[in-house]
Amino acid sequence: MLDKEEIKKLTKKGMEKAYLPVPSHGGLKTARFTLEDVQQCFKQPALLRDLVYLVGGVAVHGKGNDVDLVIRGDDLSEPQREALLFRLYRAFGDYFNIPYDMTPKHLHVTFNNYGPFTDHVLLYHLAIVPSEDRSIHEMEAMKSVSSNGEWIVYGYGSIDAIDLEGDEITIDALKGMWEEMQKTPKKYWNVMNEHGGVQVGEILPEWNGLKTHVDEKGFFVIVKLRKDIDAARRIWEAIHSDNEAERIKSFSIHIEYPGGVQNCTEKVCDKNRCWRKITKARFLELSFTRNPANPLCIFKPAF
Image 1 (cartoon, one colour):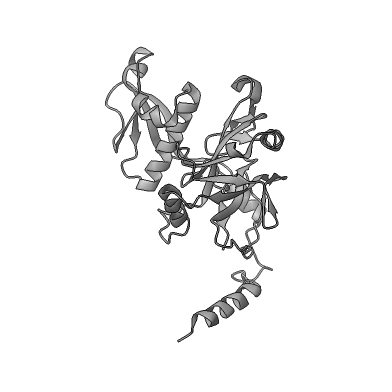
Image 2 (cartoon, rainbow, N blue to C red; image 1 turned 90 degrees about the vertical axis):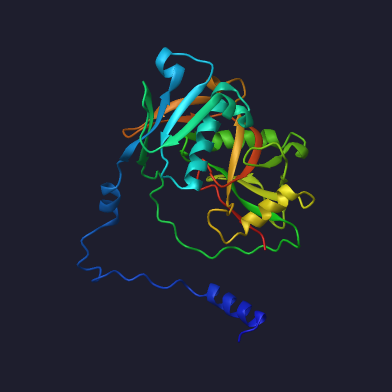
């Protein structure tokens, strides 16, 4: 039986080797399919079914004291339902300036597998949307950084890409946000869990050779978790969980718009869709999340 030290040596040796080659079935000389053709083939959104309906007083009378939604998604998995509710609650709270924790009191959601039985307005389809990033991502070994017993993670808190909510925070907006952040006390560089009310960590300006900064990709952050509260301890455990549904591996940034939304955003369209480009932003907090608006905003724990 291998002891722990031998396993470590073999693991390190394996990480230093190149990845196994990926041969082409039948050889490349007679290959029929090119990368460009396959990307062209899968460039359009694909509609799966109608999903979210507005019902109740707002749909029937044009106004009401609360908002009722029916989601034809009773067959969705629990993580998918949580992600969907998170998106809807966050969009509703941001638009109507309602705290996230208070949105369920105003936005009522019912899941079923049939859809509405009354007058309604269809709000969302369930669809698969092509990725804006069509570049080839080369695999590389994860960089190992010693944490010296601290609970440290690092990665991109925001990336200049259109997210699942149809927003794009530009690099210029992130640069301006970061410049303003550096002028504020570091005690306001808060890190939360799912945009809740408990601070579970803080953003560090630099640590062990790494620096929080904005580059051509986005806002790279180093986060140190607290070790004195159970809320942070549970997050640290979830970061290392073997259960994919329970694991936390993503960031979500919460911003506000200096001078109002109209002064900080613009509508942009291409031949496939429209989205909201955010040109100015002010940092409010960064959160750990299982349901990121931008799936590319993932982090790595230091070892």
